[in-house]
Amino acid sequence: QKLPVLLENILQGMANFCPTAERFVASKEFVKRALQNSIVKPSRHATYLRLLSLQIDSWPLEFQIEALENVGIEKSKLFISRLLAESHKQMLIHGNATLSE
Image 1 (cartoon, rainbow, N blue to C red):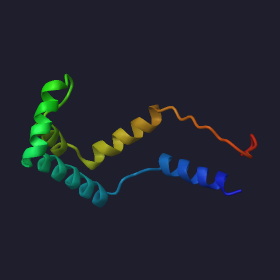
Image 2 (cartoon, rainbow, N blue to C red):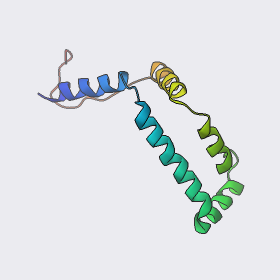
Image 3 (cartoon, rainbow, N blue to C red):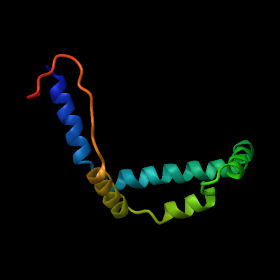
Image 4 (cartoon, rainbow, N blue to C red):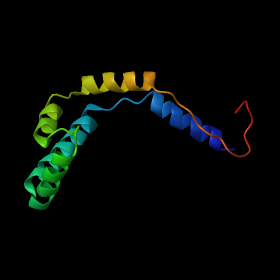
């Protein structure tokens, strides 16, 4: 009985997703701090250098941090809207459901 309501709420949340400026800044700082910490710790840095030499298509952490500095809330909103507009949604509904639901 409640599954159609849950599904509708999830799809509406995905369609109307718009990050707030405060949450965006907090998430950006979290990612930046995680990238910087992976450079500082010797064990992680050694693993990072090994993987960087083995992987063909990978960005060095310094480039990732620099690219993160250029990302803003407006660019993110534009990217999200384009991503959702161009994505294909498909789901499997299993159980007691009718076509109208």
